[in-house]
Image (cartoon, helix red, strand yellow):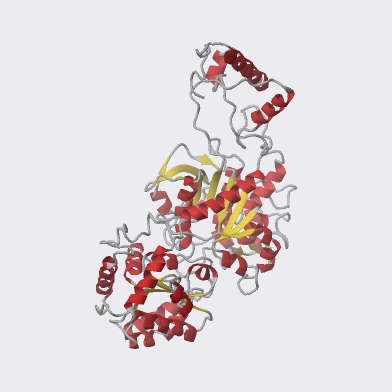
Amino acid sequence: MSRGRYPKRLPLCLQDRRRLRGRLRASPPCEPPPSAPVTEHDASAPTTPLPTLMPTDTADAAQAGGWAKDPLIAALHQMELQRALAQSSVTALPAHPPAPAAPRMASTRVLFVCAEVFPLLKTGGLADVCAALPRALDQEGADVRLLLPAFPSMVAGVTPEDAPMSLPLGHPPTPPGSIGIGPQTATPPAWGRPPLPSLSADVRAQATPWLQRGRMKHNGQLVYLLHAPALFGREGHPYVDAQGQAWADAPLQFAWLGWAAALIGLGHDPQWCPTVVHGHDWHSGLAAPYLHLLHQKQPHSARPTTVFTIHNLAYQGVCSSQWREPLGIPDALFHLNGLEFHHQLSFIKGGLCYSDYLTTVSPRYAQEITQEEQGCGLDGVLRHRQDRLEGILNGVDEQVWHPAHDAHVQPGYDRHHLLGKSLAKARVQAELGLEPRPNALLCVVVSRLTEQKGLHLLPDIIHELVQRGGQLAVLGSGDAAIESDLSACAQQHPTQMALRLGYDEALAHRLIAGGDVILVPSRFEPCGLTQLYGLRYGTLPLVRAVGGLADTVTDCSLEHLADGTATGFVFQQLHAQDLLAALRRALVLWRRPSEWQTVQRQGMTQRHDWQQAARAYMRLYRHGQGS
């Protein structure tokens, strides 16, 4: 409230007293006065703070001679003072003016629980989502913080702030001989312990993980890093060992991630408490179950809304039920309608069964996963919770993916000036050792090389593509058999096909800018980001009609070419012949430059921005906070 201005007269009737009590109760959850017990947040109470003339911090309250000992009496005293001032000509402030108001805490405070974020750690599209969506939510008025495992690249990319916060072990078994709640150790049992030659014995023996607040160095995003050197401190791939097998202690790694999220959700950080805990994929799957049990032990405490986003249902975090005891998964959670999955323990099922709301990353995929073909054994669970399931399409982060401003693609271009795209194609052909032919249809792949992505079909189409004058450039890694087959094809056609194993972010940008067609022939695809990047960069997507691919690409059929809505090429069945038929249609259109550019420009006009997705998530968050 500004100096010298006072509200209109407020009658001190019983209704006002009741309303005032509601306002006094409407402090942010998890932040009660130091001496007061934690109580359920009154969601029905008005959230606008009452304009105040009384002191606003403890020092001013002490100077005011106990003005704020009884909050209700103090507030009534304010209102009487305001009435008197409004009826007089006095405009001076009272003897003890209010301290400047502290910055108002956002009403929607979201904890993102995720295993990776670009550019600190990226193995797939999850990292892009967890980098871009928080920024978009911030523009919609949310306060978003990320909870991340302290893998070495995460630690290197975050500037620490404030003192570390220790995390307690889970609740011990009650009665003895039963199973406790939450992780009972930070040291994997012998049967679940991978070799850790790079860690000393004292580091391995550390039993208490801790949280470190900080900011990502490149953009200032607030994060919590979950430190547990014996679990996260090793170098190499975050999820699999050198043989491509999941790390033996992965269940304990990500149980601690869920446990930390649950504790933060119930006020472990005295400086900030979320109103929403939003988990992403199986790594965060235990956050909602742990919260469920902890809240049962504190039924009068505020509980945040829980949201769980399925980025890929095929990755489920399933482990042996012998992990129940070290992870603290009691009988109350381990049953048919809980975490039990064919006598094993499923992390993702925890998120699906115990979260208030479920989302996935495209409307089509939200429908597909409730059916047996795409449900990965969990379609029954998802049909049961279908009223809480929503598909929200991912977006393109234009701070990273914009053809006119992309630092990896200069000179840039837009749909009105496409010279930069032609130059990008020539540079890619030179970089990869491809024959420098501007008239060759250059197809590109930027993907994990897995059967899920449909890339086992590529060896069956390469010969015809090359015979018809096309070229292929592939960037990615994955299944050894697919890598081997593609390597053999590249050796057979050294000037018409190039294979780069691994992942290179800069090369990914150059390929998507320089290509003419981007191939995404997936068996299933929750959303897909590369086809969205292709649209943005004028690289026509050739996709299978599944998930987010079907939601975002319009086929170059005659009717769509006629009405100007075509943006790419779509095929139906996961067979090499269907893929080849779509590729032949692309080759035919390529020989008609005017029509090709019309489709190309139509694709570049499509806008799949993160603000639209952020608004959908905000509606969900607010619905949860109001329920």
